[in-house]
Image 1 (cartoon, rainbow, N blue to C red):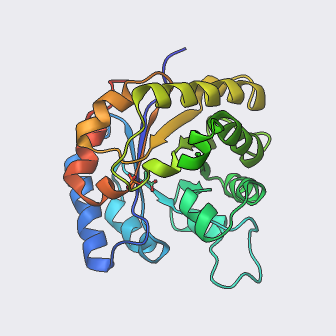
Image 2 (tube, rainbow, N blue to C red; image 1 turned 60 degrees about the vertical axis):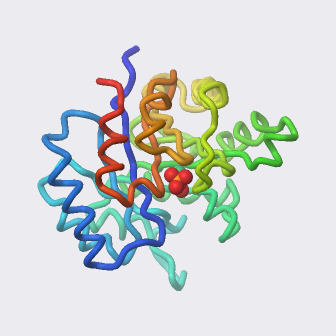
Length: 252
Ligand code: PEP
């Protein structure tokens, strides 16, 4: 089974006003070339999605949201639905990021509802999972990540509408990256579990690693078995770093 085409996704988090968001997207488009390498994706804050859609028009760089509601519409003040993201040209949405799980109390059941809403709207859900340092120290990594995968992924998911991102909470924004062995072990676990949950074709579901990925460590991380790309936070805010990470992907 050939490896799926890698996905390098930039999570801009709560960063960027119109001018710098436009400039960043424009630099990425101009340096990205023909789109023959890994698939590139940027996930700006909601306020910039319409603008960045224009900056990315006719380019191979895709657009995604950072979260969505589990309902398609309704009385949910301040929330954004998956059909709204699709309407603006998004192809992906991140759900279950640890910052949402922590700051907004997103349980795995809620993450599954969000992922299902994304899939109903024709988007691919990037479902994030990962253990805290305390959970790793307590030897609970497999239990925590396995549980999140079991509970956060909607039934009927396929390689076309699901991406899983393993992001150890302790490695996000900390400058501390998981070791090759730690990443390989958890990605293998997720791959095995997807075999049971997604069934035939599960080998094609991309499993991204996220947590302080930068140009200096990208090549080593992206070469690990069952690592099919990266979810990049801080380093995605500099076009040169984001594209250097993309360039470190093994040829497809
Ligand atoms: C993230 O928030 O998804 C992330 C991986 O952040 P960073 O790359 O900054 O650790």
